[in-house]
Amino acid sequence: MGLSPQLAAILLWLLACTGHYTLGCNDKALKEIIHILNQVTEKGTPCTEMVVPDVLTARKNTTEKELICRASQVLRKFYFPHEVTPCLKNNSGVLKALKRLHRGISNLSPQKSCTGNESTHTTLKDFLESLRRTMQKKYWQCGSSTF
Image: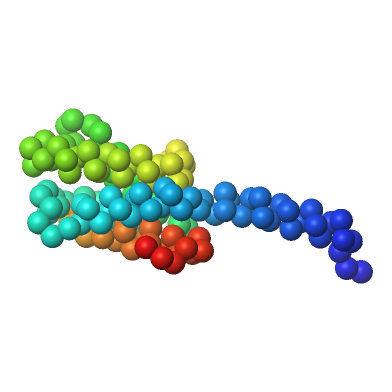
């Protein structure tokens, strides 16, 4: 009644080959994202008191992919000149970091659209710290625990 050795070998091979990809585990990308988040959440980083939608508050039945997609939507706004605050225009290093962060997050979960509740807001600092915790959790779940 069990699995034939050939079928077991094929299933094991498929699991090994697709495991990291299907989970979205890309250690290098996650390290880069966390590194950027560490930089932009340092004490004294300008422009982090601006208000953004609080899309990372996980609701029941919210998947990790959905949260990452929502975060990407918030960060994408920094590509549009009318969305960029004067503070960010005067601190181009922070703006560049937020754009790099958007590219990294988008590559983790290239979902085209997702729903987000933009009725509640938080500071950019709190949003980025919450995103950092989410990315660190994902990194640890991918099997890497040193940083």
